[in-house]
Image (tube, rainbow, N blue to C red):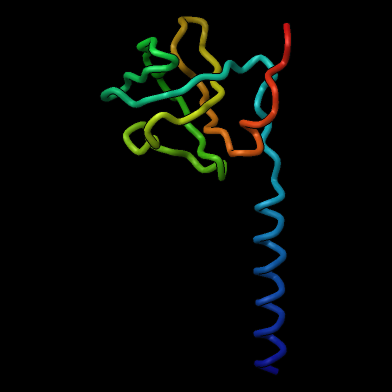
Length: 106
C-alpha cells in the first residue's frame, strides 16, 4: 500500500511540474522591449534612460516568479509597460525563446 502511495505522489509531482513549465505568460502586445539595469532603490535604467518603478510594480523572471529589483540580473532583456505617469509598472525578463520572437510592428 505504501509503495502504491509513493508511486501516486511521484506521478502527481511530475504532472504538476510539467503543467507549471507549460504555463504560458501573457505579455501585452504593446509592451516595449529594452535592456534593464537596477540602479538603486526604485530606480532602473532601460535602454540608457533612467526610469522609476511605479508603486506596486512587478518584475517577473523568465520562470514567471517575482524578482526583487535588487536581484535583477545585470543587463536583463525585458519587455515592460508603464503607468499613466510614465513609471515602469510591469516587467517581464525574457526567456531565450521569448527574446527570439520579433516585436509587433505598429
